[in-house]
Amino acid sequence: MRIVLIGPPGAGKGTQALMLRQALEVPHISTGDLLREAVREGTALGKAAKDYMDKGELVPDQLVTAMVEERLQRHDCRAGFILDGFPRNIPQAEDLSAHLAKEGKRLDGVVSIVVPRVELVERLSGRRVCSQCGAMYHVRFDPPRQAGVCNRCQGTLYQRSDDNAETVNARLAVYEGATAPLLAYYTSKGLLHAVDGSGTPELVFTRIREVLNSLQASPRS
Image 1 (cartoon, one colour):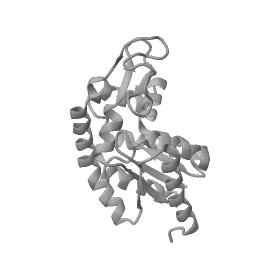
Image 2: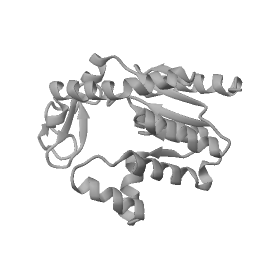
Image 3: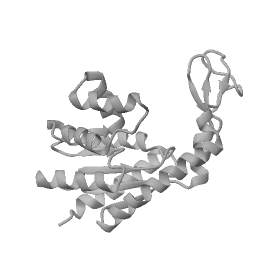
């Protein structure tokens, strides 16, 4: 299957992508990973992207799209893929569609993991990190045995500046504003499938599999 996975920070998108990779036996393609790999290996695209990254600038759409298209040409994508972090906007979505069309292929579906804003804020703002060993906890979902103290090294736990509620809300607002047109675009194409992202990762995964099973049972004409 050829799937795009969309979800806000804190929705558990990365966890679901990994679970889907194992279940579907297709590669999980993250644009973040692609960028880091290209830069590390010093490819032509990686060198071009690094120039922007070193300046703190966004990597242009055409470079990101070129990296994704190059990755989709690899043998392991013949049976399908899970795209994570791409497309991020309508031009990228149109480029992806055009690329697949050249190969006589198309997306099977776009899964949008939906979680209420208040729950996302709780998930992200509850994260705590050990100042010594870097171990991560959550005040509700994975608390340390002793409040504020790391189980491993007894170091002091702290909250990252970008994990406070105000910053988290700002991040979510940016995400929502940037993603709304893309969600509308895929809705107009009949590809968008919203999935409730509340509950355990296993429960969310079951919901996603139900959507994918329905797509396999009723392939698009």
